[in-house]
Image (cartoon, rainbow, N blue to C red; front, side, top):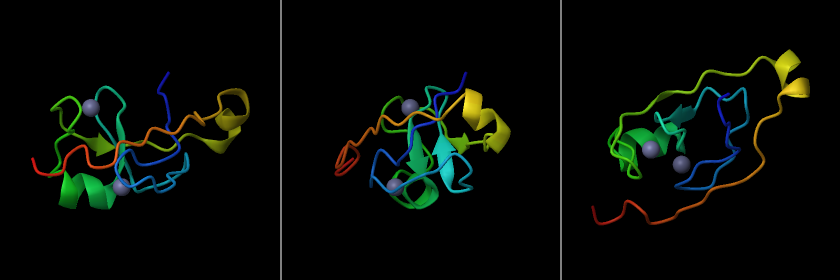
Length: 81
Ligand SMILES: [Zn+2]
Ligand SMILES: [Zn+2]
């Protein structure tokens, strides 16, 4: 099951499970669209993989399969690269 992180790892903005702004890589590193496109150039700084839009989880499934609440924040990870 996809681990849905609640926030962007770069800027820590909230990315709710139904957000159209969320981007993920194959390792489920999670970023917002502006960071993914403008700061990170579409490449995950953690693993070097490409990022794709994260599919929203149907709200009916969030009751039984809630999104992760564990925030991952790695500010400055990509700066200077
Ligand atoms: Zn961000
Ligand atoms: Zn990654």
